[in-house]
Length: 67
Image: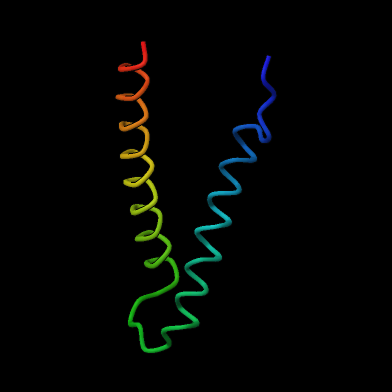
């Protein structure tokens, strides 16, 4: 059986830490931005979820076509 490099909790923490770090970098690079870090993190999270959903749906089409 294939061993995944992370369990689900580790993957969730990785994604959340990445969103937090990315948002902090954005805030540091844009000091005039009028939103709080939490707002930027929410926007980054929503974007990530949307991109993940699109990638998942494309992968499912490929899996169906291969079957």
